[in-house]
Length: 98
Image (cartoon, rainbow, N blue to C red; front, top):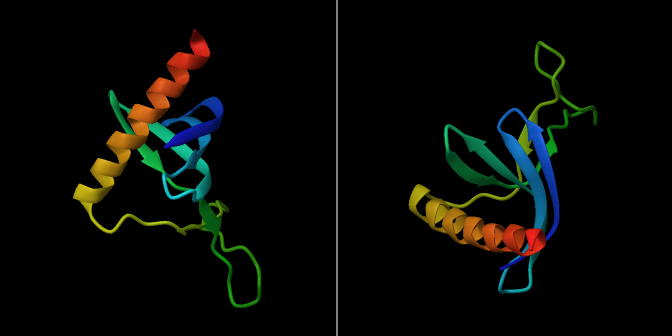
């Protein structure tokens, strides 16, 4: 896996965004690193929910509703994927600090 375009953030549990190239060559842009209580996980990009009239859907507070566009089918596979990406991300970040 190849990490690129790392952008550190501190917004709630969001710690940064990055692009991820998988061994297959598929590029996933806009991945997110989250952290809470010492636990880290990877989030995939999402898109706005669109109503039948083509407008962005919002909740009762005016916040845009989002929908998943990439899904790992089960918890075990997601944990394995997260571990691999977190390892690659750690190596990438350590290399940039050197």
